[in-house]
Image 1 (cartoon, one colour):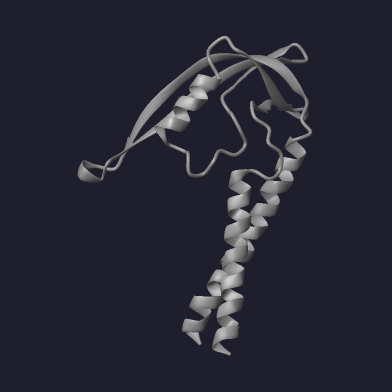
Image 2 (cartoon, rainbow, N blue to C red):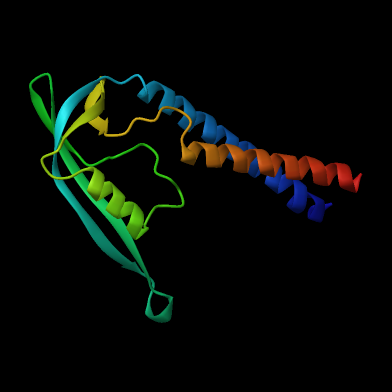
Length: 156
């Protein structure tokens, strides 16, 4: 019985948990898609190289450092959040960091989407609820639940 729980029950619980996270992120994205925007200016645009691990197992990651200035109700803010969701398989990749730096050059005028209840919270890209990150969670959660049900049917 313990083995059946590990192979079927645990993935089922994990799938339900992941789907609940998907719904939470999706709902936040839908709310965020209705945020107003103002014009801002890019003030920093560079690639930061980072290292993790040690010796032959060390890895290099590249991150775009993008900061922008914007004003809401005569108050100036600075933020560095590009998007609420980055493509999961592009994070840390040099090509992705370079594409962000090329897209957001210093002094470029950009649309800044801000939270009207807390203007310190802002993003440059506002894709809405269904992003590559939330889609990944949705597919993973459904896959785990389907696996669990399939396994239970198979054993019985």
